Length: 126
Ligand code: FES
Image (tube, rainbow, N blue to C red; front, side, top):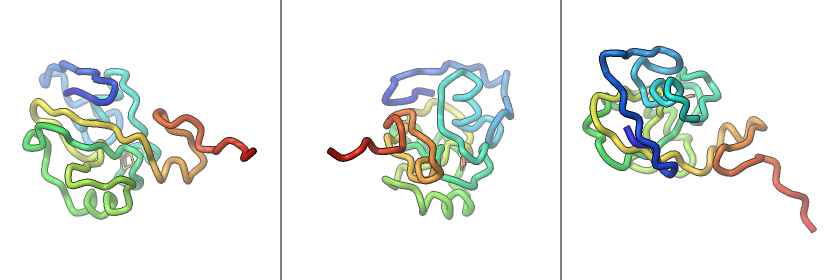
């Protein structure tokens, strides 16, 4: 699995899965966190936010099917695209390339920062 824009590739052994740390076992989030790649996950992987939103750039057929609850939650994600998925809900079954968006609406609205955008609090106007 390759994660953009950092261009980090994780070569994992499916025999070592599932990790079951966050989200569905073997999900993008699960793999990222197991291998030290930060992906926001405000709800802990329970499909209750959109902070783990990713765009699938390649290998969509190697992900589990989009389920209704994931689709419902994705509808509120910023920068929604046809390639959008929730990293905690889609299980990886082969090679895939995903991009982490630079903006995360829910996490920021809850007062958090973004790993790509820095602090959620804008600088004072001059
Ligand atoms: S971490 Fe909240 S929906 Fe994925």
